[in-house]
Structure formats: C-alpha cells, structure tokens
Amino acid sequence: MTKSTPLCPNQALLDIELERARQQLVEGWTPEHDDTHDDGEMARAASVYALLGGWPDGPERSVMDSFGSSGVPYTDRANWPWHVDWLKPTDRRRDLVKAGALIVAEIERLDRKAAKAKEAEEAQ
Image (cartoon, rainbow, N blue to C red; front, side, top):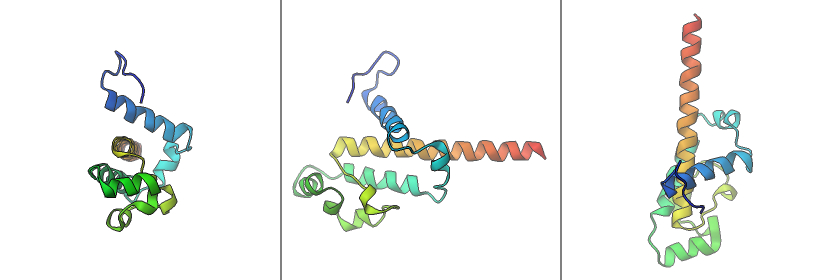
C-alpha cells in the first residue's frame, strides 16, 4: 500500500490503480491480451476475488492465507475462469484490490469493444 496523493486522495482507488498497472507492467496483461478474454473471464475472476475478500477473519480465511489457491473453498474456486495456479489469495484487502483491478480491466475491454464497433459502423 502506498500513500494517497492530492491527485488521488482515496487510498483504495489508488491501490486499485496501482494493481492494474502492476498487472499490465509486471504480468504483461496488455489491452490486446485482455481483449482476447471476451467471454466474461475477467469479470468472473473479479467476482471470485471479491468473494474471497468477503470471507471474515477466522479458520477459513487462515487456511486461504496459508495455503493460497489450494485453501480456497471449492464453491469459490469453481467459478475461477483460468488455471487454479493463477488464483492467488493474499488477504482480505488485497483480494478486494485485485477484484477492483480486474473489474477495471473488464470495463476497459468493454469500452474498447464499443469504440471499435462505433468506428466500424461509422466507416460504413
């Protein structure tokens, strides 16, 4: 977590923005790559991280925090759209930040798709 700035005084939004940048710069999930996930995968992945962020502190959360994806309850893991190795629960707040960044990625993808459709329509 970093310090909020005058340009982004909301720490949660700043952390989501930084996670989105990390996904692009470190993981290599470019807009072109994201555009290949056109079956709702990023939204479903975000929903799984949001569900994991909703688990209260207690035994189940401790198992997830200790064992990563193998500690995630099957009911949550079953909705994960990719190989389970890519599911990396951390802690409640971090999981919610990941969910937020994935939602942003999906919204950006939908916006690019709409812009391309509009360009194609105007070109006719």
